[in-house]
Length: 76
Image (tube, rainbow, N blue to C red; front, side):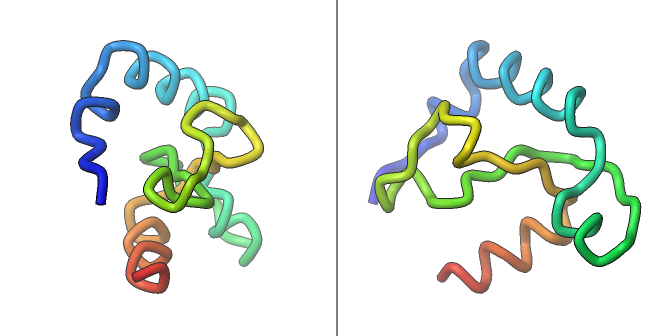
């Protein structure tokens, strides 16, 4: 299993994810349930360790911490 610490702490990722959250200020999963919750992080729909693309927009979604934790628990 790859450790993605270096990626997520890189200046390039921080700048990229900040812009993506700015463009998508609400949690995607909450919106699907009719709730408006601010997004707090960028999630890879298909994890990098499972072959998901790091930078492809179609593999990324903005989520709140709660939805990200739920999704991560389901993925494991």
